Length: 348
Image 1 (tube, rainbow, N blue to C red):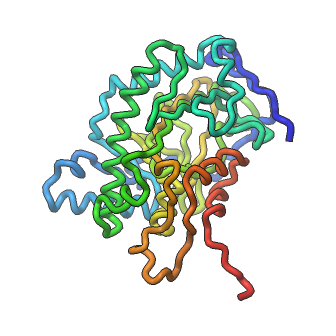
Image 2: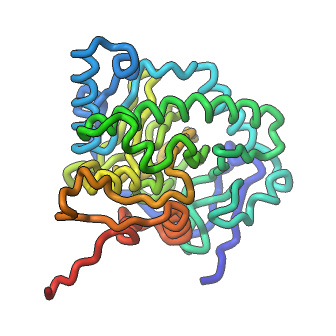
């Protein structure tokens, strides 16, 4: 398939015009959902500093969130609001740069360490969604555009803070499965994790139906994703066959379970199916920090969770291969998991 030329406004915050087909979003299957409507909330301070009984309950609640939703909010996480604001602002500055100052990253391939573009990956999609993005590898080595000048320092601090937060959550998730806290991190080499920072800019949208797709339904290829936004809603999570518009508590992060967590838990914990919807006159921005296994780690179900190998849902797959497969193909819900799923002979 021929690559669709990327189109970027020199000031995406004022015109936001994107060529190509604009997928509309039906509104009939969407409901708004916050903490009062069921989105689980995890108090990070209780996980770290809580008394034994409170911490044990928080671990159980975390396990239910991963099992029932694959999605939750984390509060009292210790990441300063000033750092979050700096991350959002420096990414905003990058999107506002003239196109020629971003040109070297516009033709990047899926596994290149810095990518700036529109849609997901236009070669695979054949259609662009209502989204501009920056993706940069942050660990074990930080790769960062030279401009804006403050971006590198902000990205280094933000990636370190959020990586520490996510690693603690990973240990707590391991405990929630009845394992030692270090079992899953050791099995996936999370201490040497692969980390990506992503900034998304969704321009204002006043097209057909009043709502369009910024990013179609998908699950994340990594282990855990941490996300916050600029006060404009648009993240939707699928649960029980319905899409829920997620509304965060003030200061909270959204945490999204990814495919690698689903694999290591042998499907007990689910990678959340989610999408980004745009609509209205205000641009939406989100900043994402994702941790994943070491690129060369072979990710497979933890043996203790699959006694005698019965009921094995996934085979071992090198994470680098899984990521490249997911990033190089059209987003198709949770279809990327088929790459690692055990194929059974139905006739047999």
